[in-house]
Structure formats: C-alpha cells, structure tokens
Amino acid sequence: MIRALPVLASVVLLAGAGGCRRQPDSDAARWESLPPVDARDLRPLDVFQRIEDPAQRSRALFLETSRVYLHPRCSNCHPDGDSPYQDSGETLHNPPVTRGPEDKGVVGMECTGCHQEKNLELARVPGAPNWHVAPRSMAWVGKSPRELCEQLKDPERNGGKTLAQLVEHNAHDALVGWGWAPGSGRQPAPGTQAQFGALVAAWVATGAQCPSEEARP
Amino acid sequence: MSIRVRVNGVEQELDVDPEMPLLWALRDVLGLTGTKYGCGQALCGACSVHLDGQVVRACVTPIRRADGREVTTIEGLSPDGGHPLQRAWVELGVPQCGFCQSGQLMCAAALLAKKPQPTDADIDQSLAGNLCRCGTYTRIRAAVKKAAGVPDSK
Image 1 (tube, rainbow over the protein chains, first blue to last red):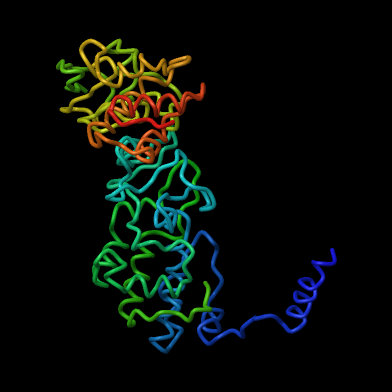
Image 2: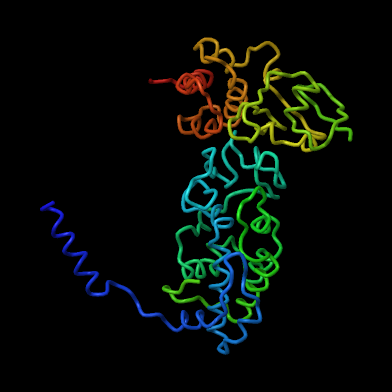
C-alpha cells in the first residue's frame, strides 16, 4: 500500500491537469459536421460534397473508408503477427494457423485446406476465392487511420498497387467482397462493397489526403 | 452429377450431389472408413486426406472440388502399412484410442513430403490443426522425427 502511494499520487496529478487530451482539430470538426450514420452503414458519397475544400473532403472520405479497412471482417486477415484473428478481432484464429512462406499457411495447414471458394453455411467455415492472409508488409491491425492511409499509398506496403489499382481492388476483388457477405451470423463490414469502392475512388480523386494522427471516424 | 475422381490410385465415378462432403463420399459411398468424422467443421483434423498432395479437411470439402483430381486416404498412404511414418507409429506405440491417428498421419506425411527434415516448430505448426484428446502429442512428434531420421533429444 505504501509503495503504491506515489503511483496513485501521479495518477491524481495527471487527472487534475487534464491529462494529455488534445483539442479537436479542424478535420475532426469537419467530420462532426457530417450527418450521423448507423454502425452498419456508410455515409453516402453526396454528403461529403458539403465539405467545400477538396483536401478536407479527401481526409473525411478516408476516415469514412477507415471504418471498413479497420472493421474486423477486413483487419482480421491483415494481422500484426503471423496468425490472423477471428470474430471481433480479439481472438486469434482457431485452429492455430501461421501465415507460412507465401501467406497461405504451412504444409498441412494451408488456408485452402479448410476454406473453400464460398462460405459453407452448415459447417460455418467462411470462404471466398483466393483465401489467404495479407502479407506482413500489409499489416494494419493496431494502426491509426492516418498510419493506415500513409501505408495504403505506399506501394512497398500496399501490395505494389497504384492508387487506381487500389480503387479497383477495393471495389471489385472477390476476397475483399467477402467482408460484406461473411455468412453464419458474422457481422459484415459497414455499407456495401460498391459504396466502399465509390468512397475510395472519391478519396483518390480528391488527392488521396490523409487525416491527422488524432482524427478518428 | 457424375464426379470422376482417382482415389488411392483407382478411378472412381460417383453419381452423387456435388455438394456432398468428400468425407461422406469416402466413407459412405466408397466404404473407406479409415478417414474419421470428428467435428464436421474443420476444427479437429480427424478427416485429413490429400487432394493432389495437399492436405484438406474432407468434412468441409465438397466432392465437386475433387472432380478430375487425385485423393489419397490413409488406406492409400502405403500398400502394406509400411510408410516410414506408419512404422514409426507402431514402434513408438503412438496411438491411445487411435481415432485421430489417420488424420495425424496424413498431415505428417504431407509435411515430410515437403520438408523431409522438419524442425520441432515445423511439426508443431503443420500438425497444429490435428487434435488428440488422449494427449499423445509428444509421441506423435517423436514418431515424425523418427520417420524423418531426425534425432529426438527428448
């Protein structure tokens, strides 16, 4: 108890000083001016038109898309280690799998040893074409929206894609599309793949600006 | 729908629902009961077989995926039970109840085909999806190493 007192005193002092809380920045203010949206939906593209400055609009668009990128249906297979996550993103994949040399599992435990090209409703095993885990360079679990934004623009860390290819991938890739049709009661990513693709395209068209480090959707 | 599949070296033509799990086709249609039904959800590994050499969980693999391809089950691992893994299994008395062992052997065989000198980590990672409720894991690992000719220091 005596040893804990200095720690407790520090906590009280920090709390009294208001801690490290930052004031909302202009991006956050712009963001808050947008109409609220259900967690299951994405804001339609036209509401972003009310943000006149293209750079600020671009940042707001990215924050909206970050709700998809960082949703467990997407981020679970962009893990920060060698094993993907499952469910809400707090538990590692069961059975315990590792990415292996080509991000498709190890011999005997390849992803496609269980995952088929479509969901299996009776067995509840999710499936889509080319089921695999994202390369380590494309990990984004634990990243802030800004960190993720910078990463997505970097071909070294986005799978070697141009921004145009990134739009195409997000809008039409079948494995990405699984995020909106995960089956077996899993919570899908917000909105639809078409909406997401349109938002990503609009983000690119407005200069692919990244939000501030503090900005959150 | 007619499915043509080569099972343990024998051409088979199966008139079954293309969505039928491969495990059902093997056990109930072809009578190859060495491959076991465990969980039905690809969580235990008891139904592991080879599809063109790759380990798949037969309980969640639609038979249509095997059309025109080669399936190997525990019955086809060797003609006489003489695969180095099977010999090691016997010499070390690996199984207890034995239910999971065909799946363990099929996974281990795929591992050795790709990595003839596996490390402990290789074995653990490749067999991580094969559960043994009797807890024979240490004997399984020792037998894989024995079959591979890797010294088992433990």
